Length: 114
Length: 113
Image: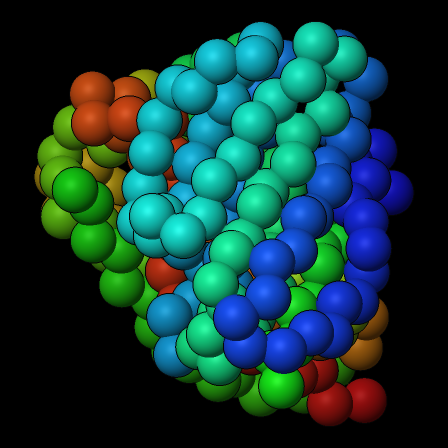
């Protein structure tokens, strides 16, 4: 058990809809990272938050947004969903803000767009 | 950014044999190289990591080697067991372009009993 909690485990919705994925980091970790895992793209970094502030941005679509709250949990919001957004979405956390330290992953949210 | 290539994409070994997975990276400024194991229905689990100031690191049956000159690093699993069957990902990271991991495309390892 990594200590990172993601909810829900599965999400099924339709095109054009909006969903929110939630992540609680390990106790003591201040950074939260979001990744998308699909069969053809592998694990792709989306965005990082550190202690409530955005720290780094990857290949995140404008339809996607995230935030980290004062209690350090994070939410990833996906809107105007398309079929191609079907994927596994992982959250990871680390103690500090630098990437040269271990990141611990949750078990992901599987998003299926019908 | 960084480009990480991983080989092979699939690997089958007999129980008790060794398995080796290799990764190359493109940016010489990369300084941290973790390896993750992902089992079906689970998230990636960190199994070992190495920093750029170290050439080799070992943890029981798992070892990682790093060749900075050639820009490649490898995962070695000895005395493989069926429970080692999973997908393994390498990653590289450099802090001067943001705080993100660049992952390889994964190796599906099957250990045949």
